[in-house]
Every structure is written in structure tokens, then in C-alpha cells.
Amino acid sequence: MLLAKNRKALYNHEIIEKYLAGVVLKGYEVKAIREGKISFEGSYIKVQNGEAFAINIHIGKYSKQSQELSQRQEKHPLKLLLNQREIEEIARETHQKGKTAVPIAFVLRNNMIKLELAVVKGRKEYEKKQLAKKRQVEKDLQRQRKNLKFGDDRI
Image 1 (cartoon, rainbow, N blue to C red):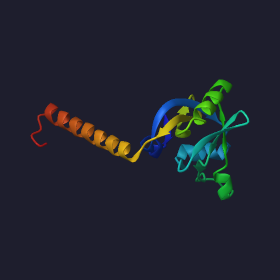
Image 2: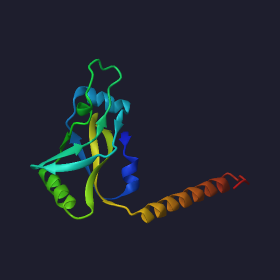
Image 3: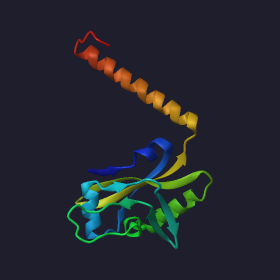
Image 4: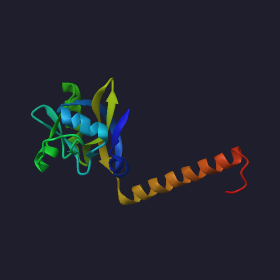
């Protein structure tokens, strides 16, 4: 089940390879994520000392939480639980020019919150425009197929 999605990353980047990682979270963070109080703005994945961390993911305050959180606590690095082989692959890929790793979505699998991340390559401005145009054409074709299927005369 999808809890939160990083739509901007999917638009700005071309996905090369996807990974699914467990995340070390505190109790109130789990509840806040389930409420959808999360922002991926400016977030990325960093590998250091053989461990992977999600940086700049903003997890807001849980609605029934009594204690106050500082800005620093809301954006602390989240440790990712990956195999050593996967961490090495991500590190090798991100050291290449033009590639980085970004979080794509938080998903619920077997009642555990997982972070879907991907190694990506940035898109140029003209590529973004072509992608938007292609999506619009697909949407128009779907609309026309639907109208023909139901015998609707308006197009």
C-alpha cells in the first residue's frame, strides 16, 4: 500500500534501478507517515561508512503527539536497512557522473514501512517537455477510446 510518493523525483529524473529498503523509525514517525505528514523536497540517499541514509526527508508532527519537535528532529537522517551488496551497488552507481539516488515512495509491506528508492539520472528541460507532451497525448487517446466505447458523440 502506498503511503507517500515523491512525484517531483519521477518528473525530474529518469529511473535507472529501483530498490526497496527498510527504515529505522521512531514510533511517532511511523504514525506521522501513516497520516501522510511527509515531504520529500530536496531529499536524497547518501552512502557513508558502508551504511545508507536518507537525507532531508521531512516527517511532520503526529496529530496526537504531545511533545514538541525541533526543526532538526523533523529532518534527521534516516538509516536504511539494505544488504551490503545493495549498498555497494548504490555507492558505485552514485559515484558516476550525473547519477544520484533519491527516495521514490514510502510503502506499507507486511505491516512494515519500507522506503522505495532509485538510482536516477537527471532529465534535461526539453526531455521534461517531451514527457509532458507524451503523457497528454496518451490521456487524450484514452479519453477518445472511452468516448467511442460508450458511444458518446462529444469529443
